[in-house]
Length: 527
Ligand code: SAH
Image: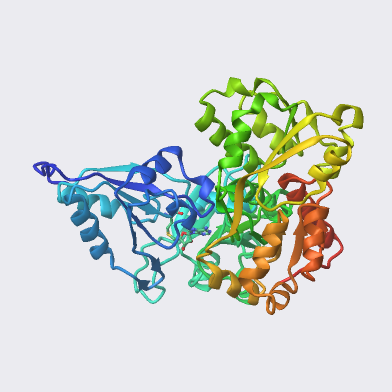
């Protein structure tokens, strides 16, 4: 189509960014794409764009779904074009998210032409196409010096009943490189037949990768002749790419993503939403799908008088003991509010119960003099000999409700202890309870993680003491350490995994070890 050179940019129109959202793994978007999502007034997306990317949009941004699933178009292409133009003419900047790359079988070219016609400015942010990424996550390089020096991207969407094919099948059939078909699942028998009819050997390796780069990825390696039958047998449906060529045979050697310990596993995180981010990242890194179910929220204590008093007389303390990252964060927030200067902390020495808590203190430029050997209250007490404790003054800023082992232990050695609440953990108003309950019921959650006693108590409370056991039956229940495990046992929940190092990383590693072992032993699979 030729472009009308007299087309003027409509003044005041917002820019439409045609953004490649990548093939599914939200980590595969470009930095530029992410920046545009974060600043757009409206985000227009289809069903292949990763839902996680939508969380990046501004809270006030308009989110518009225009998804397509085969023939089931929520909005026809014309309507999508009209929508983009109308929104842009309102002066809005628009992030138009498209799966993979917008200009690879994404109809991005057509949308751009319409925008030009309407005088709406646009930019293209290229993305990682599924044509390359899905094979890559299945351990299939689309080119390889020993296998393929060229690669062809082909649509598999053709109507096989059409008299005249738009594809000259001679060309791909004779191509000595790799063929990658998109949108080809429905036409698999037709595509493979055409290729063989035009001379592609029936024993050419062929692979299908469904939902590539996501925790739901499924791959199948076979031959050109056998793959339609095997795909049907394995129930492979769209979206999937078909790879034809000897590179497909490298899957067995190079598969890496599917070998990750959490591959195909959905893992529930029960801690507060703010604290879940790091843990979710560690789970994704190991190939799993984190499901956020924040059972607690962290709130300021009902009354800060005692905390403020302690902060006023901070120099009188010999030790301040921190028992959690939350405690550190909330304490310093209040400290700066009351004293305005972190240097006023100069007097007391600092102890921390675990390495992550210590890092939170050290991140504020303050040295930690004592770290518990085992990351529990008991472990910390072991590091405080009586001669260092007797007559000394201790401040423990921590949760409103917590165990008394530490203050009692110090008092028993003659220390003078002030325990002051710096935060409360409250039962969270979980918005997704029904969704998670449904996933548990259908045994689609493979593991539930507990990172404190309060996550256990609140989890039971939210799901109901009567139903929680049936709901979690079959899932692996994992605990961060012995105190949390004890609470689980009190709630009659089995403890399948307990971290030997009582940190989030320790818990994630212990769970990964569990899944690797049960995979090796051929058992322990759930759901
Ligand atoms: N613009 C997209 C392609 C859109 S056409 C891109 O560059 O990736 C839609 C087709 O892309 C699907 O039918 C399927 O063949 C392929 N596809 C998209 N995401 C995929 C994924 N995660 N795994 C496998 N194939 C995928």
